[in-house]
Amino acid sequence: MKLSYLAATACLALSLSACGDDSPSAPTTSSDSNQPQSSTAVETSSTSQDSQTGSSDSATQNPTESSSSVALQPESSAATPVDPYAVGTDVDEPSYKTTCTVKPLETGNGDAVYCDTTYAGPIFYDTDESAYDPTAADFGSTFVSINKVFASLKADDKVVFVLRHADRQASSGRTSHLTDVGIYQARSVGEKIASAEGAYYAHSEYVRTRETLENIAVGRGETEFVHDAYPILNGSWYIKDNAKYDEYKSQGTDMNYMVTTGWAYNGEYADAFYDLDERTKQFVDDFLVGVISKKSRISVVCSHDQFLVPLVISISNRKIGLRYFEDRHWINYLAGIAVVIGADGKQTLVPVKGLNSGTN
Image 1 (cartoon, rainbow, N blue to C red):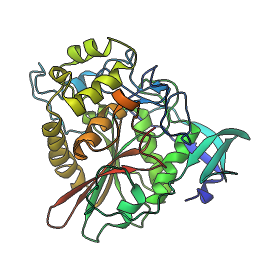
Image 2 (cartoon, rainbow, N blue to C red; image 1 turned 180 degrees about the horizontal axis):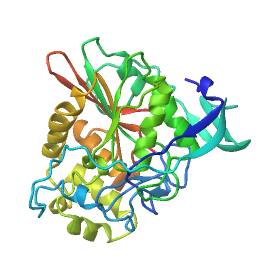
Image 3 (cartoon, rainbow, N blue to C red; image 1 turned 135 degrees about the vertical axis):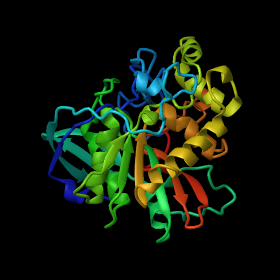
């Protein structure tokens, strides 16, 4: 799908409270040879951030999460229990403007982004034409293109997409913005799930997650952006003991990725985390279905890699290929899950990708 109508100006109004998940260091290898290799490709967080190839959203020097996200943990010492599903802070950010154009790549299936006549990077599109079949024996072991899931929805189905944000700038702080390429990545995903029906958007308290959703809304052709920030999406949902997690993470290079995937697949470092599947079920049932799906028939949620990696591993029954400790595979930008809720309440959970691959 080409970003034909986006060959003009990319002007973002960045009024964001916080969007969170970057760290200064990240995996240096990528499994996707045709994936744009940004210096900020991977994200991780000591308490709630993400990562990518080449740089992580929340490496060991990530800023500690605010008390609002720490309060999500049941053992919080707060005198008054905090509702983990309550709307959080959404602080306005200064706007910035970039004039960009999008042209088809000379080779490959995708577009090239040029900003002020300078090449900013590519956006690759999925070439997989296989049918989406949720009854297949290997269903759940691979990422499904988001447009296929969207096209399969019945009129009375509801859907909640939970995605990692788009390509971000080098800074891993809460106010780090999307790159120019990230803006158009998000818009391309919006085009894939476009319809005349409006959507509801939920993001973390980090700028880049809100910007991602703003641009998905632009890609969908929406003139209104209905959204809320939720601390639960900041990234630390699965972490039970931040001190223990930080201790493990400090033991070597890329240990944040090693620890997260070693726990999710093999049960290592378990004393730092909650039970993976129980915590996932709570998030899906209580938040995605119990809160978000009631906002709109179509909802898009944006969070960070350290949150999305265990979530995807859990809903795929550990069949998805995110074994960083073995092969350095990590979740790609704009990949995550879809929760399809039928009229009878039945849930179908699907690993989804917004770009050409769910991993990098």
